[in-house]
Image (cartoon, rainbow, N blue to C red; front, side, top):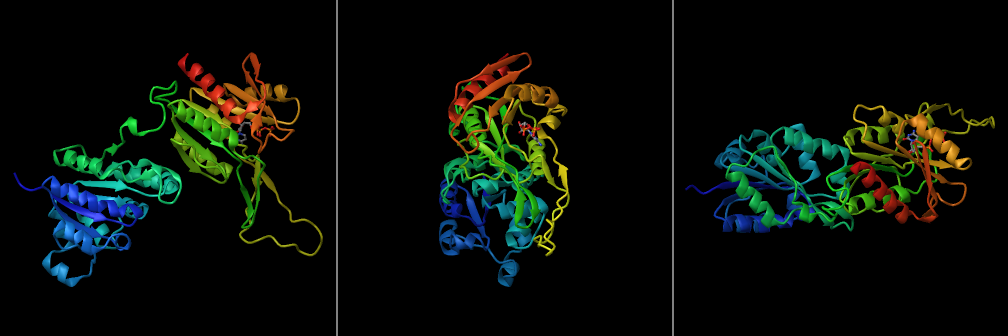
Length: 414
Ligand code: CTP
């Protein structure tokens, strides 16, 4: 049996130190490891420690002539059975997806004819960013195997998905690939690692939630917005995740932490929110809690609007934003259960009934926002569906969320 050869590319990120432990485990398992260290990676681990563990030269400079004479980058990429990028930063992932080759590591990745395993590690927001999602999909389509990051506390103090998996799990995946595992897989960690309830009433379901306000820019410093805090939507996302659902939370600008087990996508405007919602489909249920701005200015000014001295206000022609709920209701991918919210200051139930019909959803959760509901911690809601109105006593937004999630689970079960 020949010794399996791993070409390990270490890119920048706080998790780079774990690559040292990975080298130790791979050597323990009888593999030969040769390391390539990117400029960013070298900020976190030294060539000396990587070289000591691999017992080999550590390659980092594309234009190091001595290296090119001894072993060129093409050879380097070919003299391996498997190329492993660990950790794979958002930056190297983007370059891989775009086919950029601007240093030794990315050139090797473009030149190699060997299977590639990438193990991303980054801040949760970077992991959830639409650009990273797109790049990961592209890499999987290109045949790169991606090992999904773990969820947990991050070095930056946030909580979420983005942690490098345990080096033992990575070593296990490398052994699997060397023994002929499929390329192009996106390997998700076993459900035991998730904190949501895998046996909960929403397990196996995908729930989409929108929350918060939208900000519609007027000029570089001003925008149209509303008082929505996002609390009710975030509470619903948290309750759905606790009930075992896979939850995508599409959020306008709010000051709230991402609930555990929830994938959050941040947007600013109504149009961005609609695009993110459409991108997240299909879903079993969608709960649209966001207070979407009804209008945006027709044309955003490139520079700050100035007073012209006449005393007349700047003209601000408005145009209507897309209605996300109504768009979803007639979409080919309409979720089986579509829930809207209605913030009203008068004739709450009558307006909710009209909205239910106008928007084509299955349920409207109506609340009276004439008091301090927006930004407050409590809510009194009425559930308006075809032919029925159910009014709940005022309670905390968390309780409203928990009851609503029960209601959704029941409706999906029937
Ligand atoms: N909604 C939406 N897209 C919009 C406006 C609203 O998806 N452009 C959704 C909200 O998330 C909510 C429901 O529609 O679930 C009702 O929102 P609301 O602001 O109460 O309704 P509007 O359509 O804006 O009606 P109006 O302003 O006339 O009360």
